[in-house]
Length: 433
Image 1 (cartoon, one colour):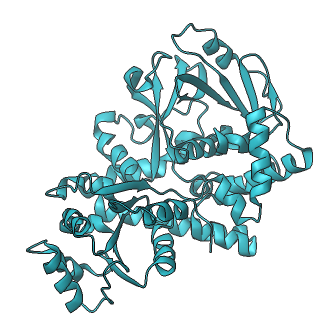
Image 2: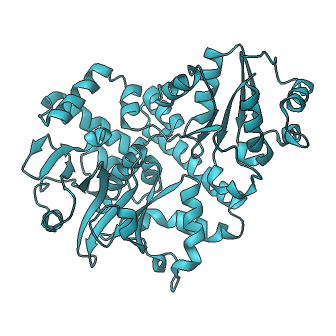
Image 3: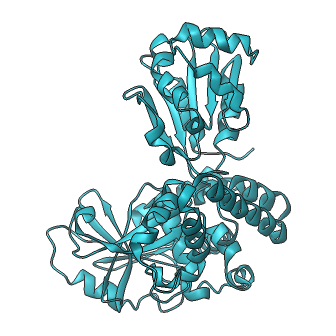
């Protein structure tokens, strides 16, 4: 079974000795939520009562009527879902977005304290209006993503000692041993192709069969299209158009999302709801343009200018554009105008908890990403070739006076180097930013 960072989050929650809220785990489909919770439940509880409200919609009736814990317990017992042992039972409410009353009931289950409860949902962001009363203060909310690059390294047998050595190189801005650097870059190229969906990663680790990887990825993208048809309502047509257009949009030299390339004569307001739906479903991420390089970035954005990245780069690779996998394995990271490597960095920054922004001047000079680290502005350029020390856009941005300190990062296939204003880091060190 894959080692996941969420395992430690669950363990810390389990070890709380005072007030223990419900653990609310959100995230897109296929990122491994159910697998992780089941494994955790088996290890730490005598009994696990699991309810999946999409697979067994009849179970929603347990949360009809009165929501006091005695009424709920009586119905759970009648449903014969397992033993209800006080202090030793985990209630696992999966796909809770399909049962809004169960979300409301979390408060009463927590207040009673007899049972621990984990709720999980793939589309929580899409159903928030249906919950009559949110259990504010009674939920510990965590978002789960597909595997990040560190988890991918674990899956491929890279031990903590090696990763700690890489972290020291990052913190001290010292070069990585060339053998280790080469190995990390080879694994990073494979991550660009495989991505972080657990089923796909497991298949790759077991068999190293890229053909099977592609089949699994295409199955997942089809399941996303099915979700759009099932849940996007009147927005499903536009949402499918946007979803299918993402690879083409990212292969443009200027990767700004253009509605006119989705539909001739199309207008942004027609597609705004569809874009937000894909974002709320955890399928894609916005990267907004900033008009001024000042903090906070959110107050300086231009709403109609943005890039739209796939949340999993392996899925983007499978949806792309020629034989991208072979080109990447052969070292051509600039394929498709660097779309896949830039998407990979965007995906990993989101997994690190960053909101994404970028800067440009009239579409000519562009810095790929801006992030905020404490009170420091960190412009990030992603370079795929040997000209990684040439960056006119970054130089222009660094020359702009601001009220905050700026420290730039250039991510490339090359080893660590440092100048007065810029840290040159290997692509894989994005996992430490």
